[in-house]
Image 1 (cartoon, rainbow, N blue to C red):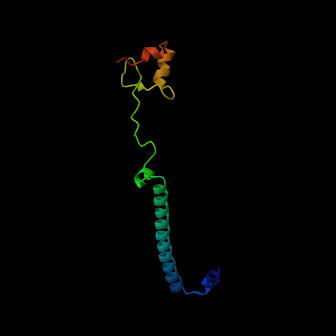
Image 2: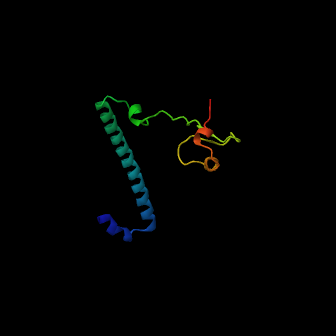
Image 3: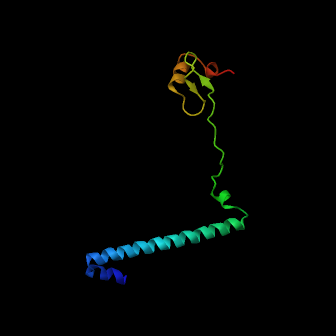
Length: 108
């Protein structure tokens, strides 16, 4: 690029001024690009009969509620397990003592 060859000959103050001009031009072009992209997105959404809220919302927007505990320690009911994932150490300890998962079920 022609400008790159001229940089070594510029004074410090000139370089700072040039940098400010470049920063300003970058911001201006960034705004233009964002506006252009926004317009394209709106046109695509309109083509499919969508509004921007539908396009920008999360897929499966429903928040999952926590899974209820299915198993509890027989002596310490604060120790619970949903039955998903790895068995907690307290479950393994109960199984080692001869109990079954059926024995640890929370009965409602």
